[in-house]
Image 1 (cartoon, rainbow, N blue to C red):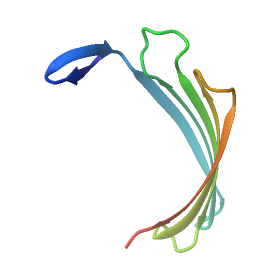
Image 2 (spheres, rainbow, N blue to C red; image 1 turned 180 degrees about the vertical axis):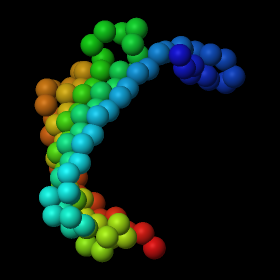
Image 3 (cartoon, rainbow, N blue to C red; image 1 turned 45 degrees about the horizontal axis):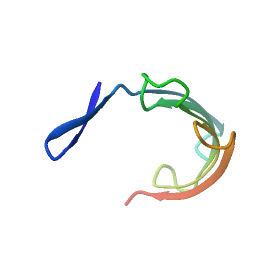
Length: 97
């Protein structure tokens, strides 16, 4: 259980829970990688129906090994209080120097 404090006093106690499962596969060794991920987060287990589930389908292109890569992810999100199956596309360029 976690506590939310304000001005030194506890204003709320909650019990959060979350997990994920991810699998990746090198389509072309050292160049292209596909991944599939499912994650679930429940910010307060005492409240029913407030969890968020996210499916991620990703593709990574390694331009220069792990030092420079381009990542594209499609996310399908089902969050409590939001319209069903919200979708996002995230594209990132990651570098190590």
